[in-house]
Image (tube, rainbow, N blue to C red; front, side):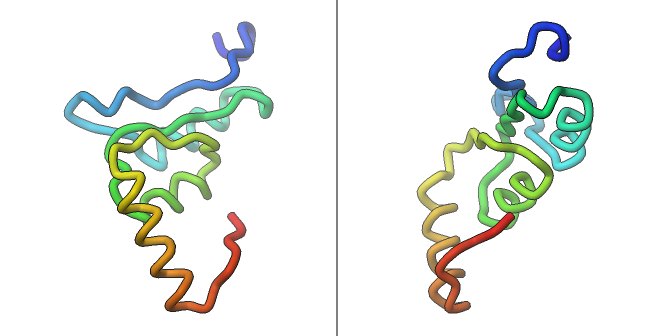
Length: 88
């Protein structure tokens, strides 16, 4: 359907059910929607590692109630590792 309608983005889930987004979900969606359609991952993204895994899988939008802790964790990782940029 997204190939025909061409929405701005498709979303994995609301994050309000028993599960949330998985890397497999993002990969599957990325594989089946046109390149110009963004993929939003939502639900279950509570730490920097999961955030980075989702970004590497192809999501361009993240829905998370843990945004501040994720950014703080990324900042600590950057400072500890002497990193000033991130490439996905």
